[in-house]
Length: 361
Image (cartoon, rainbow, N blue to C red; front, side, top):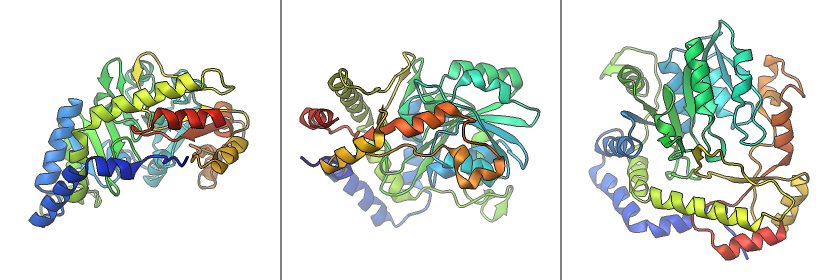
């Protein structure tokens, strides 16, 4: 049996007519930058999430960059976040010459441990970036309480969690700004790079709209130093076509996760823990095992693809050596990085495929 990790080809074939029609609609119009397709997707995203403003952009990484630029994060400001995430979370902080300040993670959810945030706050702290790892939102009750106490801004890095909820509220509606990614392998992906920024604040929304087109207030008049952060019209049209099926796909992802849980309940592994306040979109289905490297080798020999998200926490990455963190500073993140392994996760995995993988595990 050969199993596809994300099964993007199957999804394309499933929605081929609608996706092809959307692509050709753009080709026929020859309107590739901004315009109707971009506006249509942004309206659809606002309707789906109930957020007041959805601003598409060129990638999930740029969505974080735009969020911090909109909040006027400056050199030497401090932004608190997790060391157990994709590098873009902290990379964008450093890109603005601000300082990433790491906080260890919760051993069950793998998200930032909110109980350890307050001790890292200084007079330079301006924001908290809460990463919704693997599709599960952080403890937003605790994080919001801390942010309100110290007058800090909260950015949700929802690159892996579009459509997830916390206490029944979509993560796109949480925080001062919420971001997401449409990278192809995300739960809702395009056929290249794309991202989105959500906010309920009109002033922030208007600034982000300007920042993504070189800080323009009107054509060739520039209010801010910005960037080329637009999402292409073709990619917007593709995401819009797929968004119509997204609720169904999310339900299927959650069903796949339940089947994994059931098949693995008697195995010597730790399956994903989901906070009862949260609905996860399961961007990944990640196990913890003591011998993850050996398990990965065994599964590979049986045509079962896997991934390690993530093998080296950010505080130990060479590019962040200037922060002068040491091994042992964030023991939970370091432990999880040695034990974590992600199995194939997509809405179209069959029970026979799941049972096949779990037998080898």
